[in-house]
Image (cartoon, rainbow, N blue to C red; front, side, top):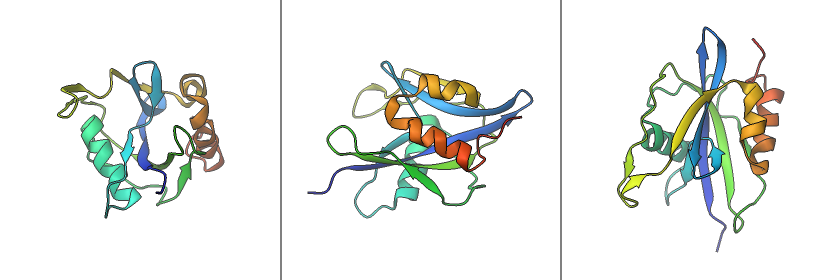
Length: 140
C-alpha cells in the first residue's frame, strides 16, 4: 500500500507592511493549509479543496505556476506537497470540520517570511528554503 499523500498551499498575501504567509495551528504545530489527496483527485485539486475547506479562501492565483516542494516522508511515510499561490483575501475562516465536530485548526496567522522558520516544524524547513530559492519569499 502506498504511503498517504497530502497537498496544500503556501498562501501569500501582499500587504502595505510587506509579503505575508498564512500558517494554521493545530494544537502546538503550525503548518500551511493542506490535507489528504483523495482517490481520483490530483494533488493540485486537493490543495485547492483543502485550502478552501480549512480557510475559506477561494481566490488562489497560481502566480508561480504549478511548481511545488515536497516534504521528506514523515508520520508513517506520508509526503506533503506544497504549491504557492497568491490571494487578495485577508479574512480567514476556521470552519467546523463535520467529522470532528470542531474546527480542525485552533489559530491562524499571516506572518512575514522571517518568522516562518521559527514557527514551522523541521519537516517544513525544506519548503521554507524552496520559498527562498524560487524568489517567492523575496525581501520587501
